[in-house]
Image 1 (cartoon, rainbow over the protein chains, first blue to last red):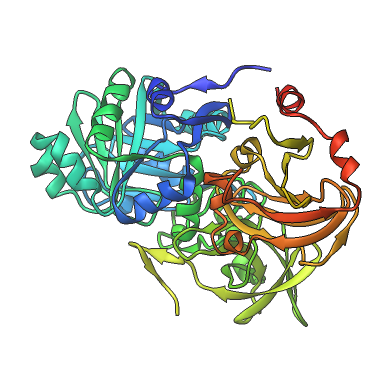
Image 2: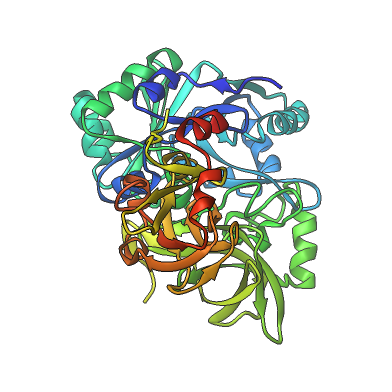
Amino acid sequence: MTEPKQTPFYPAHVSAGGKMVDFAGWNLPIHYGSQIKEHEAVRTDTGMFDVSHMLVSDIKGEQAKAWLQKLLANDVAKLGLVGKALYSPMLNEHGGVMDDLIVYRINEAETRYRIVSNAATREKDLAQFGIIGAEFGVTITPRYDLAMLAIQGPHALEKLHGIRPRWRDTLGCLNVFQGADMGNDWFVARTGYTGEDGVEVILPGAEAAAFFQQLHAAGVTPCGLGARDTLRMEAGMNLYGHDMDDGISPLEAGMAWTVDFKNESRDFIGRSALEQQKAAGVEVKQVGLLLESRGVLREGMEVVIPNVGGGVITSGTFSPSLKQSIAIARVPKAIAAQAQVDIRGTLTNVRVLKLPFVRNGKKQFD
Amino acid sequence: MSAIPTELKYVSSHEWLRLEDDGTVTVGITEHAQELLGDIVFVELPAAGANLVAEEQAGVVESVKAASDVYAPIAGEIVAINEALVDAPEIANSDPYGKGWFFRIKPQNAADLDGLLSAEQYAAEIG
């Protein structure tokens, strides 16, 4: 049994009182005392998350764009400026989701890109990058020397300006879903997994712990995996391995918007499988569920729709912002505004809602 | 190392018992239990007046992480339940041995308390 790996932030986590757990082979904090308090800090102020377990891969090659246009279901041709980011699934031949990731256009010539992908799928992703990459002669460089920190919340940018005043001008022009090279292997992107404003900072591992301490001293709340999960669920964001995986099509997981069919000559991996699915009709869809009575909806619970059929909860939790339980579920498309969930043997009424539940701190439904 | 007050009794299912002056026993979950559970969001308590046998289910404590059954540590009648806990379940995290009490039980046999774990024995069990 191998020991979980440490990220460059490890000493900072321990120092801040992090309760460490093994997540996908990494030693990360589940919380630093209360995941609910950490969640609230992100919705009202600023929190920070060590996301160094994710993989950063730097791509170089004359045919890098063509490679990505084959590899990914979304189209990098959409990246109209340097630094622009694209969220995309990476599909297998059957149209199942191998992973979801973000790709940044790094240069004008579209010969350099940066990909940020999930920890649990690291080896599988690198293998797929390599197999397809060989056809296009691209160089794929995993950046194991880098750390990554998400700083999220309504005051995130303000806090960052405070400790990096020389960044103020660049950050001031940074659009949502755009990244900027700050020099010396620092890269700041206005992206996140919480539904709040904020950034994800990629930086040299050697400078990680000091950066964390600076932000902590400036009043940014360290947040763990527990809060990360409740925040992303409120924001209606998928988690690979739960809301979708290699056996689930993006069309079944609320990700149809991430698949770009427009360029008919772009034969991305999984395209024909998806076209067949569309032609046959996709019978299931992704919805949000809200439990207004007491209890917690959990992954794996059965969703029951009388006279229609059944579905399953793919992610469930207690929402600290709503103070009620929420879930993401894959259900028959004929579902109406109400359904039932089997909670430990009792059929319980739930409301069926469109995702997200919360955006920029505000409830998105009546 | 979590707190394990020496004047209380314990059971392996991570509950503590305090013998009150009137012979009733107050029951709650230990600090170790609340730490394992994480943030508690709902608590279901037994009905006042219910007569339970030892190890019978006496409620549920639900955290963000998981739902966990609470058991009657000894046989008896539920004479009081902590309504404040139902309204603010996080008290079981912040004050597990004080304001976070779950229910009070009138023991069927006072002698049942003797067979329970001491603080040292519970400490040894949780390691």
